[in-house]
Image 1 (cartoon, rainbow, N blue to C red):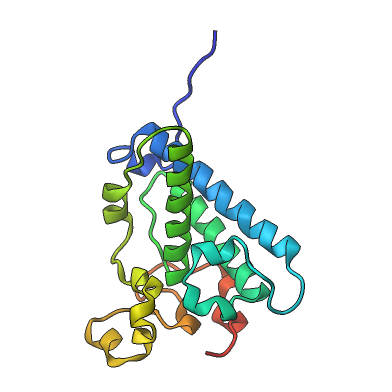
Image 2 (cartoon, rainbow, N blue to C red; image 1 turned 90 degrees about the vertical axis):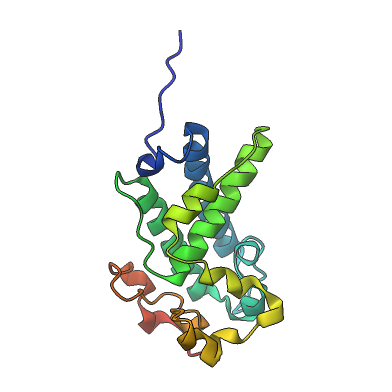
Amino acid sequence: MTMKTMTTYAAAYAHVLPEDHREALRAGAEMVVDHIFEDLQSADGARPEWIWLSAFLPDAYLHRYDVMFAQRFLVSAVSVGLKLAQSKPAILCSVAEELALNAIIDQAEVWLELDGKRADFDEFRSRVYEDWDFELLFDPEIDGFQYSGVVAEFAMANLAFKDWFKPFDNAPPVHPYTDESKQEAD
C-alpha cells in the first residue's frame, strides 16, 4: 500500500493552484537551478554560449550575460524557489527575481505538459507579480524603452539592465550575493 502525500510546496497558493501545479512549481524551480548550473559548468571564456540561461531571459541582453551575471541570477532563482516553499505568499524583491519566477513557471508548464496536463498559472501570476513590467523586456520591438522617459512616466522600476538585481522600493532586501557592487557597468 502506498500513501499519497500532499505537497506543501507553494502552500500559500493552495487556494489558487491545484496540487499538481504546486508540485510543478517545485519541479520548475529545481529545473531552472539545474539548468543554470549546467550552463555555468560548461562556461568557457568571458562570453560563454548560454544554452539555458538565454532561454529564460530577454534576448536583447544576451551579450551582457557573463559568468558573474549567471551566478547572480542563479542566486535569485534559488531565492525565489525558497520563497515559494514558505507558508506565506512570496514577495518578489527585484526584476531578477521576477525573471527567475517567470523561468520557474515556464519550466512548470513544460513539466505539466509532459505529464499530459494542461497548465494554468494565470491566477497565480496575478497574485504573485506586483505588475507585468518585466515582460516588456522580452519585446524586441520596444527595445530601449527602459532608458526612456516612459519608465518614469509610468512608474516602472528597475528595468534597466544594471538595475535588475536592485531591490524594489519598500521590498525586503535581496540576497547579499546579488548586491549591485557585483554588477557590471551599464
